[in-house]
Length: 283
Image 1 (cartoon, rainbow, N blue to C red):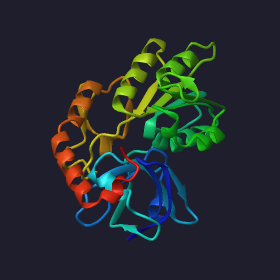
Image 2 (tube, one colour):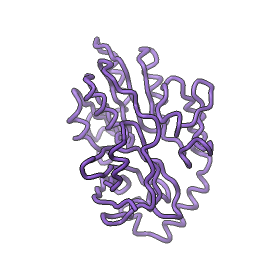
Image 3 (cartoon, one colour):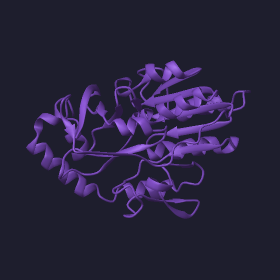
């Protein structure tokens, strides 16, 4: 069993849990993820490890409540436990001193971006971080990202905090400077990463994106997480989760993410009827 030791509610729909998983904490490297199950009947959910405490033997997980399984996870409190935490999985981020690295995170994607940004800074890069959310109340990890960044730019879609606009607006401003950017790393909604790629393309700057598509077994056997990269089928769980941002077929990926919406809605509504307490404060 993998016990929850600390919990923070960033927002009624965004939760942070610190979970006992000493072997994962010891072996984890930036960019890797775990597969968790709340109980023996639970769905397998992929979550990037945001941070670790090796001495305590704990890992930090941040997730957004969007479906039945994540709302179920949101009911866990310190002292409760996950049935399974499997990992670390996936290929670690390739980190070295590239020069100037811009890390772009949107929404809850700021959470998996953080350990990569931290690793880039520790490798000696100049780190410019751009993080954004729809509105101020949905912004997460600002202080932690600021602490590791040479420069932090915050955007909100509605202008309630920081720069009024999208992360791509801030990214274009940075790319238009005289200073050379040696790499861009981006994590967030698929539509956001698609437009980050479009923004970067005229500047021919290397771009890495981390894909958060559906994963089930995390061994490459089931094929649920297949994506098209440069016209070739790849599996996010074993070939990724990071890929060349210019090679991803974002439209296909967004289409695949819509495949099980009806089933997901039915499962969520059934869970809402059984556990109304999980939806307190959620519109």
